[in-house]
Image (tube, rainbow, N blue to C red):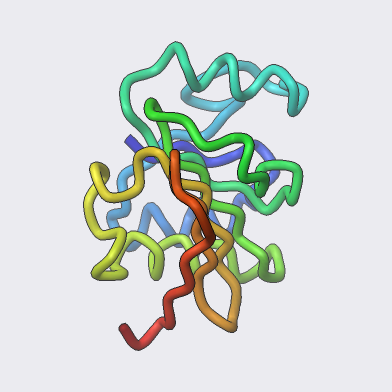
Length: 129
C-alpha cells in the first residue's frame, strides 16, 4: 500500500491516479484531515506494510526506519512529487513493497539516499541504475 501525505498537491494526486499508481491519501481515504506530523508515524503503525510519501523533510530521519513501513521524502518541488514518487516505485532497487520496508529514502534530482533499518551507513543510488 502506498500512502500520500496530506501535503501532496491535488494535481500530483491526479497524475498518480492517471498513471494508475495505487495509493491512498491521508485526510481523504485514510486517517483524518489535519493530522499533525507526530500523529502520522503512530497511525502508519496501525496499517499493514506500506510506503509513505511526503514532501515534508521531517520524515527524512534515519531514526524513523521501522520494519513495518518505508518512508520516502520527495526532496523536489511540490509540482514534481508525482513524477518522483513514480520514479521511486519503478527504481530496480525499490520496485517492490518488500524492498522499501524498513527504509527512509530521500529522492531528489541527484538520486536516492537511503537509510535501512539496522544499516551501518547510508546507501546512494542513481536514477539510471
